[in-house]
Image (cartoon, rainbow, N blue to C red; front, side):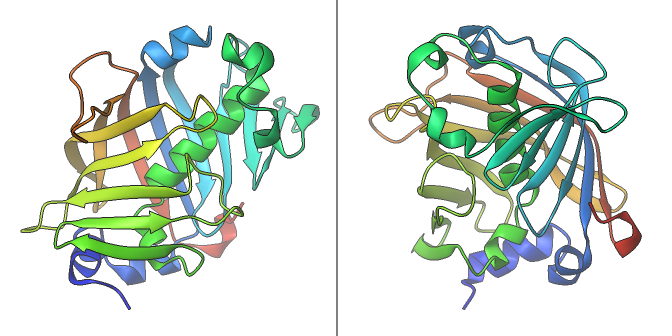
Length: 241
């Protein structure tokens, strides 16, 4: 049964009907921050992302230096495809390769395809996650929900916290540990701005920093900054991916 704050969040982000009857999200994003630099990755500059809402499937283009190469997450597997939809590299059970070895210092395109796609899928498909029967939600306070994710959903870690404005239901903070980086990579994802496009309200600016001992976000360093330039939900089954 949905808690009052979960119901309010679903409603403010478009309503259950919209999320249950839409198939695809398409967006344009720019992302930068220390997390990219530490893994020797270039920033995303107006990259295109297309994802299924009802399952962990996401396509991010470009994933690296080659503008014609897409990184694709398909449940727990990742692959790279060129503009002719030809697979040029793939990695099954991608999570099992993290975080040790050369991944402590460098991520290749497949590593980035896994991390970026699952992170975006989790961020962008909220609040559909609130209605996902595989996820267990617990109301910690009237403004905080704790989610327990199953192994079948690629995500940062099993137990995460979502904080809402109790008056309007807007998400303003998301706490997690980025396990594929380190079990000590406790982070806070703060929503700085919401926008409305195509009749849908969504978080358009986010900042990720380490989470302090008090549980509050630290001001520095900025691990990731996310700017969403475009966001669209597609309801027709013709556009399923």
